[in-house]
Length: 226
Picture 1 (cartoon, rainbow, N blue to C red):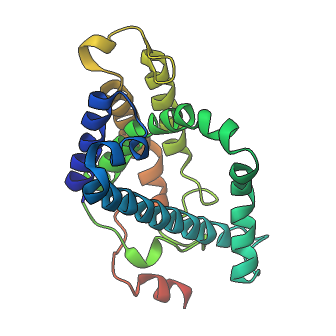
Picture 2 (cartoon, one colour):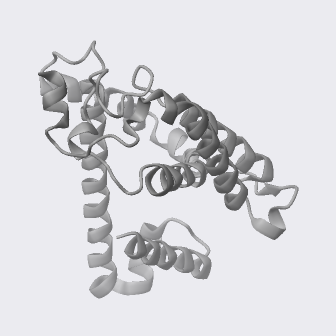
């Protein structure tokens, strides 16, 4: 799936370089005509609807973990999740013109996030996860950490974000330091990885938090509750 997404993204990237426009809907019909452009535009519409539906559904699941919203009915909960998005209906031009910068700054966090996930899953957990514990918000759950937050990971994430923005500003394309030699993604990934590994080995794993080394059997939590 990751390789497929990379191919799709590269296709859009190369097309934008050729037509000098990042908005694919503005040139699909011109380049492909009705025979190819119209189906491509339809697929783009369907893809956006499905992606937005998944994201909003995930937002609703996330709100379920907030005590204030836990007892609400699903339609009411989703109404709350959709409320901030209504701003795009009222001020579409103002928000969409700034949307590319917003997405660019958000994308910079994927470098440290990828590094943290790699070191946590491959080095610390040895590719072992208890799927029954992932969405458990019980303090006795394997992945509860401290109050439901992994503060070491959050600190490393913030550090990687700062490193990335220092080396490369995606909105202004301003660069500094060793960006030409190693880009911004490499330092923003490797440095948080190493720091998170050291913090985890020194503090988190010895404390027993995070489910490192715990049983991955689905019945583990049930026995704990009993």
